[in-house]
Image (cartoon, rainbow, N blue to C red):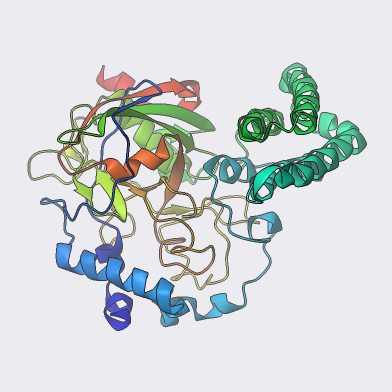
Length: 435
């Protein structure tokens, strides 16, 4: 089993069928909701073999049970990952892999302000503190919050100095909300209300994220000239994807909120937002759901991607990978091809609901409209040692209702995908020309 998985090409693992997305509301309608398991279905139009995919899933499971590390990382590609280098953004690999999509997005912002990171880290660590049974967890939570508060008071001047000039007022407002939120958390701890900790942590970290975003002053680099006239997302955007669930007594419809990261994948994210505004994905079905990924974006007809009406040709985007410590993404090559086996990607396949661009196995720059969401968590795809990081362009994360992705089946319909914020960050939108 292990050998069969190691020998499978990347495309058999997660590849070739594209997917849709466009409008939504933030909720899921359900009845006696249960966690969905592997459906065993496959995308009939995709290039993936259901038998091989099944072998992959079995091999992954066997690898976890047997604790055989090379099942997850082919020896010829990632043998060096046993001794990973410490990247510039060392927090991304310190301790257990970060799985929370919000945390991954916060750490992926193009900022260099140690003061706010020292506030953020203990607040993120509350998640681990809550793994302690009962109210004993609250003592650890209190230590986390007090540490974050001390760091905030000691580093406030450095944090304020890091704000972009046009965002200072908003940044200072976020600091005030953060301070108040931490005081509320201490009161929750004092009252021993464990159930209120996680929602308050999420609220506080949203303020931290707002502070960090206020430190970003414009778009930090120039996209290579050959891609400069394509739709580019110069910043971030949020979309809602509304899916109509068929033949599932436990789930009727669901809205998935997705944050797209143009700081680290401007071409890939820009291409997707442009397609969303063209309503490309509205009415499209989920085309693959095998327990490992959910995939869509393959239009009807012979084309396997978006046909640009202005050229009557398939619009493709290059493979786009941002690495920690680099100012611009790598284009056109996998990190393996570049020999960067130890490189840490800024947008890793760590979170349930990681969103990436599908492509042909041997054509790095063949991505067009097909996208996929990863369902396995980072135990199966650990940072620095899986076969997805550096081979496929991640450009976003599902941040709300991601758990329901596992309930989607082939044939479920994407009713709409809608940009709810950040559309102003889209440069060179082709949908406006079409309109």
